[in-house]
Structures are given as C-alpha cells and as structure tokens.
Image (tube, rainbow, N blue to C red):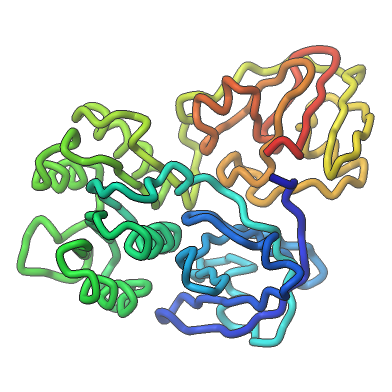
Amino acid sequence: MSAPRFHTLTIRDIRRETPDAVSIAFEVPSELQQAFAFEQGQYLTLRTQIDGEEIRRSYSICAGEDDGELRVAVKEVAGGAFSTFANHALQPGAALDVMTPMGRFGATTRQAGGGHSVFFACGSGITPILSIIRTRLARDPDARLTLFYGNRNSGSILFREALEDLKDRHLGRLALHHILSREAQDIDLLNGRMTPEKIALLVRTLGGARAIDDIYLCGPEEMTRAARSVLEEMGAEPSRIHVELFSTGAAPPRSGARTVVPEADNGVSLTVTHDGQSHSLMLHEGETVLEAAERAGLDVPYSCRGGMCCTCRAKVTEGSASMDLNFSLEPWEVEAGYVLTCQCRPTGAALAVDYDQV
C-alpha cells in the first residue's frame, strides 16, 4: 500500500442530511480511481484554507464499497472552523485537497459466511458504520446485522431515510433500533442516552456478548472506551470489539499506549522516510516527530494532532520511542512498532520512522 497523499478533487454534490449536517460527494477522475478505492469504514482527510489558515479535518466515508461514489458526512460543531465552512459556505464545483483513504475500522469485517454483527453508533458516529453495513448487505447474503443508533430526537437522526430503506430492502437481515435521549418512545429501553450500562442491557436482549460475532462502537471517546470495558467483562473477545473514536478528552490513553516521558535532548537525530525518500533531521527538546518533520518542511500526513485519527501513523525502524497518548492504535500495532507521530517522542539518541510502511 502506498503512503497517503493529497489530491485536489472537485465536489460533485452536497446534500443537506439534517439541519446541522451535510454529506459531500467528490468527483474522482479516472486516473485517481485506484488511489481513492476505499475499504468499508475508512475515512478521508480534507484540507483547505479558511481565513488564511490551513485547516485539516478527517471525516468517515459513508458510502459502501459498491455504491460507486466517494462521500463523507460533516456535522456542524460549535466553533468548528471546517464543519461550519462545509455546512454554510462550501458549494458544488468547489475544489478541496483530499488525502487518499485511511483507517482500519472495517478492516477485519468478515466479507462472507454470515454471522451476527451488532453496531452501536452515536450521532455522526453512524458514518463509518453505514459504510460497513452497506458493504456487508451487498456482499454477504447470510449476514445478520443489528444497529442501535443514539440521537437526541428523530429530527437529528443522520441518514434516517437511507437506514429505513436499507432495513425495508433487507428484512430479516438488518434490525434497526433508534435510541433517543430527548424524545419518548414506546419501549423504555430505547429511551435515554447510549450509556455503557444501556449497551450492556441491549446486548443481553440479543443473547449476551458471547452470542455475537462482532461488535462495533463508534461515538464519543468516553462512551466507547467505557462500553468496550463493559463488553469485555460480559465475555466478548477483545479482538471482536471494534472501536472508532470521534472525539477525545483528557481521559487517560487506552490500553496499548506507552506514556513514559522520554529523556530526549537537542542531540537526538531523526530520520523520516516519506514517499520513498529519507530525510535526516535533528529533533529539538520537547518536540514530537510530527513537529520536527513540519519544522523541516516535510509534507507528512496528519490531521487531528490528538492521538485519535491514525492519519500520522508511521513505523519505528530504528531506535525506540514513546507516545504521550494513544486512542487509536491497537495493542498489536504498538507491539509491531507503529506509532502516532503527533504523540511520538524518542527515548534514545537516534530514531527512524517510516511513513510508507502503513
């Protein structure tokens, strides 16, 4: 797989999905079709200039692999520069820099052979899950899927019509349940917030965690981390719990992170490999690998800068390093030497990282 890179794409259309969310489809020219071929559950990093400042944001692809389009959803958040721009100023025909697809949320999704997969999404967390559901329904006639989707009220349900259409076209294969926190429903269990305790109760209605083949969680960091712990306590295999985070706070890093403060100084040499070229740098005290690469003028991939999105993922090929935070790499990735360069600091006199080994 080649290293991720930006290409300029034209916006084909923009749809108003809810009062505070739009979906954006891109025109992909024939020469870039292979570069932008995506896997279910992946995301795109978008880049543009807003008021003279470069802004990068990552958004999940909501289309299925066989839908014939490249589309993401952008929900407006208070004070969000890009989300406000996308919801109120962006127009079809405009051009954006779009990084080739990244992410592994759906990478272990079974392609055939049936099985029961259960999805828990909150708000805009539906976007990568919708991609997985669309792909599974199209490719695996024996798949049985259950979706629990949390929102404030029926008016805030993103892709409501699309979900209802999928349910109606795949009766007996897709079960859809809305969890609403500010709108009463007949079934009490479907009222209120999507808490880890509620997720545990819902899983019990399906026969328990051991009766489910795969569980997908996508939503706020606090909820998904707590829910994962509850599900593991209920007997779910950790390898069958798949998590995608859409926000992060001041909570401690997830299992697999290494948070030892490095004793680096101005004498640390850093080698960065990107797009087939190696660059020798000196890493200043207190800098992350990403900060050093940026200071040297290297256009390496990044987006969130918070240890959450995995866009800046690279592999340590020489030396050792620690991460301040890690909300996205799996324990096996950390063991294999992968790091989030926005959180990565050397723990010795020399360090080499390779962005091409994605």
